Image 1 (spheres, rainbow, N blue to C red):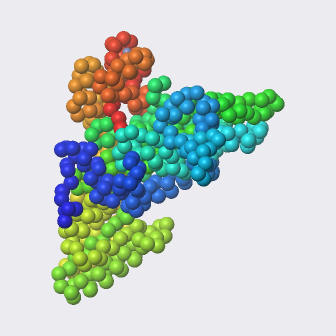
Image 2: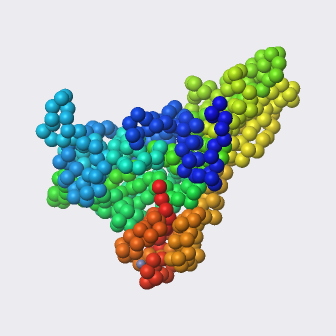
Image 3: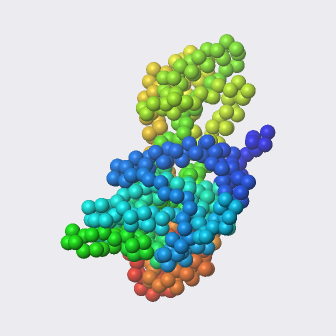
Length: 489
Ligand SMILES: [Zn+2]
């Protein structure tokens, strides 16, 4: 069987390893359309768990969901100068409908600022209508030339939050609040530690005043921009005449924010946690938290073991019809496969805990729990199985975050580094390098040109080095700020 072939190791070829994991763990598949992907149930199950957690967090911070059209009049995109410059090269345009050429071409949304703020302009009259806090779950299309499953595809799924506020400061607070929501989600649910901070002018969103981002480190030491939050200022409000009457009776333009995360997070999860056996899914996002693999040799044993395994499954939770407090448990009762082949398959799919149970375990009133993250095996009594499994899942969730954080710190450089050393590092194993920047876009461009590394963010205070760098990584002039430099996806 082709599937029995070992995965390419991460050390051998990280990129090939990634593609093999995504395909063989059945997260996604290539589609008949170049650059598009099919998200398969294993991958979509992770996305559904991500959606649920994020949606709860958005609602807890006062946002409501709405839905706007997929098609946007082309003229809308042209109303905000930077926005059109940033997105026009990668839009897909519908020119015909119902067999006729359209009077005005329609753009398939690459993002929805333009159509959403055109609608906000209709709905907002007075300061009493503000803040307006909307989120949309949707698909978007960006005509990318080089695509990778989950990381960069022509069409992807995401959420985009869009808000309108009466003042700059309220919009800024919202932008930062949602960055914090993303960071909490990435760390607490995806076990993916991120560095937060502001993007430079050249890396900010097309049409934004300021962009903030969460940057995770993948196992090849490259950064993945996992979520962004933008203070749009009044740029879109001016373009779409989004005004309101202030408390003093004056007319003013509203202040907007937008923020998004996408199915890219699934790629981030693969590259943060996976190993040479395949995927490792953090328990909170795992569609299946526990897989029970029954072991038998004789028919008599089989009946007895399967009966016990099914009883355990029902007591822990039902995979198909689960209640909120139940665990997501699957019993792999296939008799066409040996236990070893099942272990291999569930490890590849990244299920956090495997429970092995055979006749000898039953004789001792126990089952064996095997952690996917460390491979550690622990026998546990059937009398306390529920609690033991739950505690183990919590420990795995915490350990995965800790492991990822340690790896990131080990591969971060905070000491003084010469530009020559930096170039060598970026040519080789890569790293997160915290170094000074003079603030000149020319230095930023030169580093990008020569090393492919970019300023990921100007890190927030808690991520800054104890001793602030004094000189620019590139030109050696006095540093204005500390920057996090890395190669990125
Ligand atoms: Zn410089």
